[in-house]
Structure formats: C-alpha cells, structure tokens
Length: 336
Image (cartoon, rainbow, N blue to C red):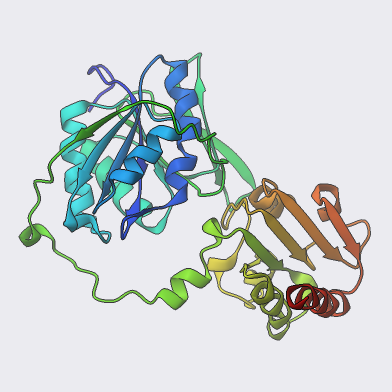
C-alpha cells in the first residue's frame, strides 16, 4: 500500500481481554490526537472484543472522534488469526494513514504480521512519537544499539505508517465523559475453523505478577542488593504495598531476576503512581524507563547517586536497614 493511495485518519488499536481494555490503548490516544490534529484528520479507535461497547464509549471520552467496533465472542481472548485477518479487512476498507499499537505481547505479535501483509514498515517498541511537519511523516523514536542511542525512524514511501509503542510512555488523556463521537459497528468475517491456534490455559500467577505497565506501585531493586537472594527485601516491600517488583538492567544482567522485571530503555517503560528505587544508582538508561512516575522514592547509600536528581523523596541509607523499617511503619499504619 504505497503513500500515493489516498490514506486518511489516525488509528489507535485498543486491546481488550475478557471485556476489559489494556490501558496502553487509551494512553496512545494522546499522541494519536496530536498527530491527527496536525494533519487535520480524525482520530479513530479500533476496538475488538466481546461485550466491549463500554470500551468504545470510553475511547471517545478519552479523545477519539470515531470508534470502529467489532464485538464478537471470538475476541474474548486474544487470537493471532482473528485479530490479524479482521484488522486487514478494516484497513483495506478504510485506508488509514497511521496505526498506533501498544507494544504488548499481543501487539508485538499481530503488528508485524499486518505490516508484512500490507508491505509497509513498522517501527517496534517506540518510546516517543511525533509528527514531522517538514516531511509530513510520523517520526517514531526507539532505542537502538542496546539502548545506547535513540533512533528516529520515518516511513515516507508506504502507507499506513505503523508502530508499536511501549505502555507507560504516555499519560492517559483527560477524560471528557460528555464528549460525543461516532461508533461504527463492523462484522467479524472469520470463522472458528480459520483459527489455527487456540489458547488452552493462561497461568495468571505469572502474567499478573510481572504486569509492570499496569501497576500503580512498583518497587525496584538494583546492583546495591548484592545478590539474587536479597530481592526478598524488594518482594516483601512490594507485597505490603500491593505493588509489583521491578529491577534495573544491572540486576538482570547479573542473573538475579528475569528480564520481564527490567525497567529502562532496554526493558519496560513505566509510569506508576509510586516508584521506589532501592539500590539503583540511576543510570540514564534506567531513568528513561521510569522518570514519568508520579512520585519517585529513592533509597541509596551514595548521596551523590544520580537517582536522587529525579527523586521526589530520597533516603540516604543502607537499604537492608531502611526497607525493614519501611515495612514496619506501613504495617503499623495499616493496622491502626
């Protein structure tokens, strides 16, 4: 699909599961709105799911001008074939100019498939997107060379322009419940017989415990922990706060914790209400992944650690002494 075909409007894919949206879809309505306004086009949310009319309504309240809704039981859980084939049908019908997709496990699965079928480019795992007025293209920014530099990528010759964007990079847009918009209901033309793979079982204990992008509180550990066993301090603090466990790249590289917990340029970008960094010096790669947090608390023995430059509250001290006292005070407050 080349750029000389008339393509119009900015699409944002709103991922759902069991009737509930993934937050990153609504987050992407913010940059989507900016790009759509820059080119004087509509911002269109794409919603697939079962019983998700409420998600379509919320998408309008978060800024979408229109919603293309495909409500079908086949989308209750994610299916590569169902999402890819249905999205292709819609793209061929409406010819969007730009498609934004959350860089979730599912988004990273179907996004490249769709781009390949369209013979267009897809920039993966972006940490920023904007409209380049000089070229008339979307500028996709992502880490390159192991996170040591940021690359700006454009797709000038093909449409639609496509990219996956990390959850947590953008804050949710302002919710306007009185905003009006159009909901266009489309049919799903794929049958169960066309679904080549089926999910037999989902291990919720794993997926929920490492859901950093959705967590409101994250407690992260770094090189200052000294060894893998000391992540028990991080897990204990996260548990009492009802938060998730994160880590720095140094802890992952040392083999102390799986990569799924890593926060930073080469890990996950997060923006929780509270981020607690324990024994993390604050290298630029780590700061890029968590500096958008509402409140940052740092615990470090080195008073000159760079993490204190972005922290709202800093504790200069031994984390092995501070964290147990922290937990005692929290439990005392909860029991009062």
